[in-house]
Length: 145
View (cartoon, rainbow, N blue to C red):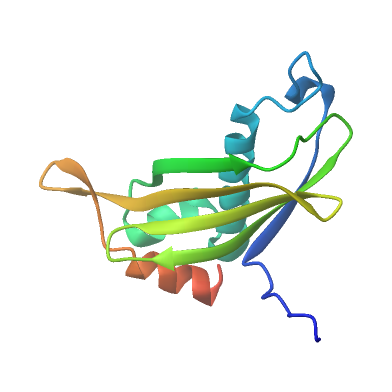
């Protein structure tokens, strides 16, 4: 039986887990997982689009905001772990996009998460979710494209 080749992640970041990330039991306090998801997404924006400010300026947007976030915890992450967080997929829709993440320690899945985001623009004096196709095109071209 041949091993299945998994697709390369869209983006990957590594974090050193420290004592300050943990609760008194020595396990990472769960809100830190959401912070790492957000930090990984913004690392991707910087690498592929020049960063949040550059993307917003280029697309005349106010921000790439979060609509919802979800995380399933599979195993504890503890002080001293090297945590690898991958963006495994981005599912693009007309006005939103869903970012899928996987966090691993020593190759073992520690958590899986998703964020639903939008590209917020000002329209008729109020903030609204705009068309995300220009964002998709910019990120696929790269920050210099």
